[in-house]
Length: 295
Image (cartoon, rainbow, N blue to C red; front, top):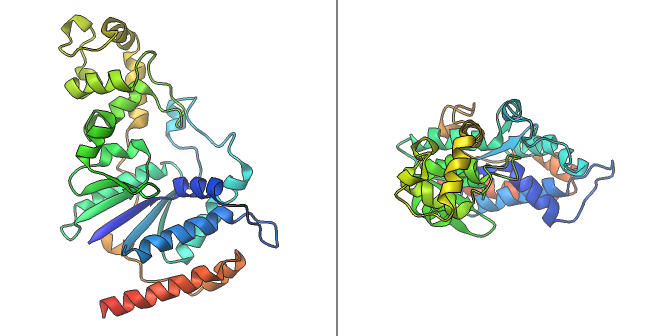
């Protein structure tokens, strides 16, 4: 059994910027919603049987209490925000499990679900469907990261090849280099190359000697980097906390709850309401195929 866990917030933004606007007769913007529904159906058409989508029901999370500059909903186009909740309703109508996160983030739900389903002996592989670098820390064993847009699958070896560090060091890596999308800067002077080289040797921030003379890895500007870390150690540890996926986020208790068996009876009306009746036809066709495969 393969399980596909989809980053719905990423998909919503991606389709918003990739597809033309589409407004219904009542003026509602639904272009991105139509795109995400079609994308999830494409996943199922490709053979996915157990699917869930994690979304940010609101942008803000517990991390905003940890760091004032953490990402929030300010500056996000109203046309995107107004599609957040209708997307969740549409996916559920299509028969897909949805986790709308409030205290936690969609990334946390993806990580928590990946850990949960990977523990099931029936599961052979778990695909976390997002290019978000934060989720690299969850990769390992059965769990891989899938960038559907570019057709790239990253296992733990792939994470090392991409970042220079293993999954266990991704949160430390982000703490040092920062994550502009999430709103924290990292430490001055620390870049991808230096963080990768140092963490490849010391794994975690606490393992990095604060005196560069004790480093047994050669990095340009080592003295300056070590001094910066010494002066900002607490900040670096805070950034790591912010960058760490919270795998205790509430999801489901069993992988069986993720099996897609078809749309709900109301999906045809919903598809018509967003001027996309073809989505209902595709979903019904897939449901019939699924029923035939299981009989």
